[in-house]
Length: 393
Image: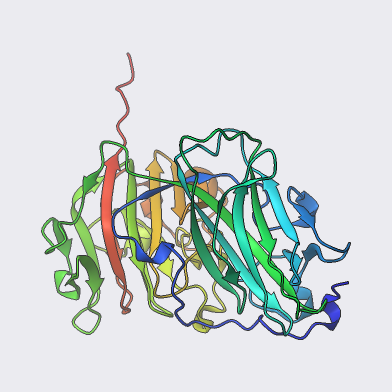
């Protein structure tokens, strides 16, 4: 039986160092991630939608690390799933109908750690209605808490039938004792695709043509826009303005770095107030331990919080989409919807920061980067304006 009360605190230390990604950190071309809803992605046992099974009745279940000495919640919130490290334990959930298509590829994100002194590893798979894997990952070793991404491709030309399941399975480790376990949380899933028609590039890959503002503090390196905080600070904006839009891009931050995405912003003044600023930063760094929820990555600063823990480790590329459609704002990070809200509802009782944010009322403005004195990289910048037919008289 797994007894978390008697387990040593191995694998729960949080660190801000770079580990190579399994697949998400080495994008060679722009892709888009279409989120697929995973019920109960953060393993709240009061809303069970996962089936946790083990070789013994206590080898799989729900558990709260916070109750046993783990204070930071970057990689988990509330409860997590636990799988016995000796192999054969699974966490599985039924996927939405028609979510799995032959020939399609899917990106699975999850945070994982090892609890206990022994080696532990797992595989991720998509299984068909007969419980046969139709796509599986390689073995993944669990260690300190970190986020992983794996890409799974469904074979084309084969007869497969649902209902399909997403499955995490612990692999056999004969040396593992019952005091060891795999901890799993924050699962995301997205279909990997390409942009639909109508997107326009915002960056030519060579220089800052089409951009205005503090061009001295930004520059181009290996096909990316990067900050040069040693030269200057300040913001960089698109020359064009946008009202309703879908903005897609990739970003990479070193440990502890901070920046932001300006939306519907004027070219002067503080974009976080005169426009709106979607946060870009490494939440996991210790210097951000006291952040308020509306300061986490993906939050609209001072207005609305975002879910925490779906970002790739520092030094890896992340894929993000910001959609501003009338009064609706949505932020998708690495295939997970981390924020979606109505601006009017968000400020009805006042802003979360307690400050005036007149930019909430703006209907259009520049897109841009809000420099905060740190090195940050951006690439694959493209936007699709959202046009509505004129209303009839």
